[in-house]
Length: 65
Image (cartoon, rainbow, N blue to C red; front, side, top):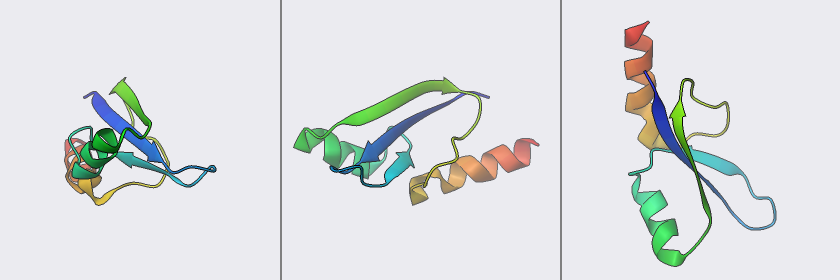
């Protein structure tokens, strides 16, 4: 299974946070014109801080084995 992710990070090297691309927080950043990194077709979930929007993705991944 392949996953798409978006990453937000505040100014001055603030913590990067991993999100689903359709996360409301990503939409908020987009409306504010803040930078968003988008990663398409990932086989694994990157090991960085994760938004709660990814809880279902991790559960589905665990169930798939």
